[in-house]
Length: 341
Image 1: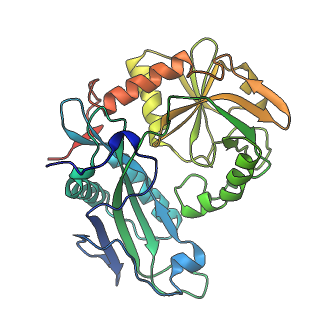
Image 2: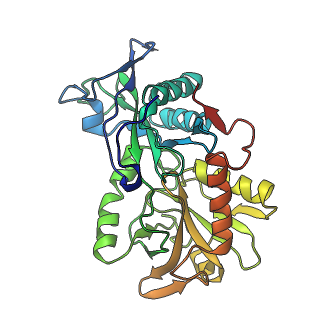
Image 3: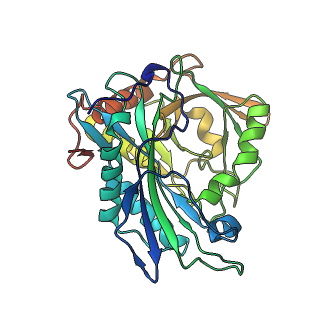
């Protein structure tokens, strides 16, 4: 299929309407078959549950054009599983995981002319999401829902090369110990908006959230998991029941161990020990790994040996290996890439 006439090299990370989106409705206790539609507008009651009580969850993933010209989606089965877990926690009906993957592949196929070409630095971002749509005025779950998938071509997260981030230790809490931090609910991101705006106003790129119980342990940022490299080359990620289980982070840990022969560890990470790490990064769908050069804890600067100019050497190796898998330059583990036929 012929590609759209888009300036792929200069795409930003923003929304662009594409031709088709998938919609399935839940009513009277069952999901319908769903369909691809043209209309990108949603009509709902002013009293829809999502508008009153924020009953909404979502996923984020990407489709890539590989070196040999295939269009692939990266590990959609894990996004399906995570959406199912989010649904259960939010008292929403689970959209069947096999149907989720099918809907994602159908939506990408229907918009394949928007999948950026290999080597452009751009990708097709995929946003599956679900929300309560019927009127609800008492505090309770909705009875009717929509599951939808849309796509949008996006440019690279980094413009003009990788520049390590400066982040601050936040005074705000991201998630309570027994709250919703472990699922991808819209409300988690809503509460982070004030914190990220104030961080930007103070000259920081992001926030480091600590555990709400003791405020001594590293959790995550508003939209990414932390990844640390020890001075002897071990990859360490924080462990907590209120951290979102990032698919990128899990993939990087596998790559570190199975592809690069590195030692990996998921454990509690205390703020006091962060100064002892050699490298730090934020991992997520948008950038794979965003390097962190400096963390500021209420005026106390923690500067990593990797510096403020380039991605650290181990972080770079992890980044290159995972993006190589995603782009088809390196053989992927079985089941990681789903090809669009």
